[in-house]
Structure formats: structure tokens, C-alpha cells
Image (cartoon, rainbow, N blue to C red; front, side, top):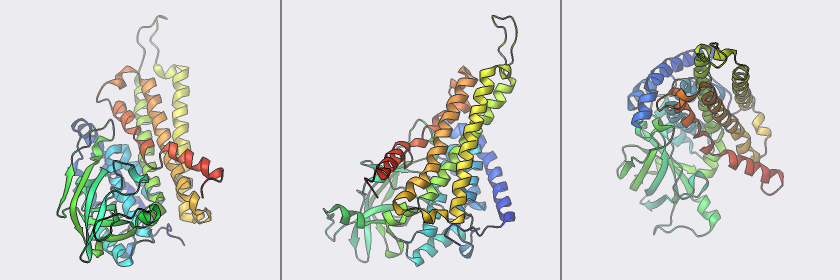
Length: 404
């Protein structure tokens, strides 16, 4: 038994996958519209809440299914086959549920409150932790100034994915001295960086609609603005670095599922087009089916292989979680080892969509073509932490004995 040991039964898992398939069909029909209109589809919130998916990772004692991290990743993959941007938005909720389910930094009363809010009341969580200065890797400029037995939180959070569909917001803020001043010592600053879980309808909290991007437009990842938003002791979620980074596998496996689903969809679309496409009149005086062209067959096989390799990385990583093999990893190795699955799938998604573009040709370059949208969406993949470059850099330094 370990923190990733599943409680979900095979029958519950089958029903979960079936419900994901049904949602994916609805999201597929919305994909182009939400991309064109650059909006988060709020009409998806209630159907999502009514499904088993919302509380799939919540332990059974709190009203969920107790799904393991591999099952959750497979659900994300199914949903992304419908629309990757909508799936990526709801992946934020699942990542936060998984993190709070296991985080040792969380007081048990706070954990139970969050788990029951999701498992019994079907509340949705989002987790904006990035800021303009340094993203997730930098210490929080957002501050929590003590007031009475609680705090007033002030700051801005970029990339607030799912904020327009959430009931609760988890964020990081640095607890100041009583006069609002911050510690000058770096280590003390880090020790004071805490997680708070606040209701979306809290006072002095607004959303600045800044999300206008190349891809993943349906995530609605706007900027959250807090101007003295109150937080009570019951909303305190413990140390940020210990609590969030220590459970980073939930984000990594969720991202992996989404981008693997994106690659699935690009491959399927390209294959269906290539099966029916023909060259028409050629210099050779014959009408050639594209599927008879050797390099097309080779390239499609390569796309299949890339997805197959990424799929095996996801499966193996999920089984490492379920079997407890991760407990053998040194603490300094854990995040890069988990994030290997994110890098493998996002790089595969970018390569597959690129190849699909090349094979299908000019029609895919037109605005609104499904491959054009998937191509853009895939490019968000290497920006999630660890980015591809960050992973390689970290591992290189670790292997050379410079960190850890």
C-alpha cells in the first residue's frame, strides 16, 4: 500500500471511461467554436460536475472513487480526444485534487474539507501558482498580510486556468510580517510561502481577461487579481514548496494524458484524410492515391510509433506510482523523473502534429482546420513546468553533482 494505491473497482473504472467518452463527444463539437471565440466554455461545467469524473481521485471515504493516477491520466486522454484545450482546463482540477489528497503539508481538517467539497458537493478547484516575474519557479510576489487570526491576500496570478469554471481557488502567497514587510533572507522567504484555498466568490477578487494566445484558447487561463482578499485559518494549506512540488506527479501525469490524447486526435484525423486523398492528374498521367506513396506510409508509421512509445511511458510511469516504485527515488530526483512523462508526451504531440501538417498539405494550413488548431494547441506543451529545457538542465546538473 502507498499513496497511489487505487480504491476504484474495474466496474467503476469502466463507467468512468464511458462517461469520459460521452463528454468528449460534446467537447469535440465545441472545439472550433471556443477556439474562434477565445472563450472558456462555461456550458461544460455542470455536465462535468454531474459526471463521476469530478470526484474520481477523491478517496472513497470522502465521496469519490479513489481512482489512481494512471486511471486519471487515461481519462484525460479520452477527454482530449474530444478537445485538448477543454481537457487541459479540467486537468487543473484533477491535478489539485491529487495534490491535496496526499500532501503532507496539509492539515487533516483542511484536507477533509477540500475532499468533501469535491467528493460530496462536486466543487471544482483551480490552482494558479504562476506570476509575471518568474512563473512557477520564482518565489511568490503575492503577499498574505496578517489580520486578526487570518490574512489579507494581495497580488496577481497569471495562467489562472479554469478560474471561470471553479468554485475554489488554490494559490500561493508569502506570509509577511504584521506590518506587511517581507523577509530579506531567501530561505526564510521560501519557508513563508504558503498555500491558501479560497472561494471564487470571495471579496476583492476579480478576473482580468488577458488570455489571448496562439493555442489552448479554450482553457480560459486569465489573470486572477486579489486586492486584500480575506483568508481564514481554515483556508490555510501549509507550505507551498513541500505541499505542491512534493506531489508534482499529478500535474505531470495529467498533462501526459491530455497531450497524448491530442496526438491521438491528430493522428486519427491525418490518417482518415490520407486514406481518401488522391493526387489527381499528374505529370505521369495517372491519378495516384496518396496512401500508395511510400514516404506517406513511412511517415504515418513514424507517427504511430511516437504515440506508441509515449503511451508506454505513461503506462509504465503510472504503474511505478501504483506499485510504489517511486519511493526508491532520491528526493532530488522525483520531480524530473515524474516530469519525464510530460516531456515524452508533449514532444510526441508536437512531432505528430507537425508530421500531420506535412502529409495533409496546404488544406491543414487554413484557419479553422482541425489540424491547424491541434498544431497550435500542441505548442503549449513544452511550456508547462518542468519545461523540456528545464528538465534537461536540471537532470544534467544533478548527474554532474551540482545539485541534490
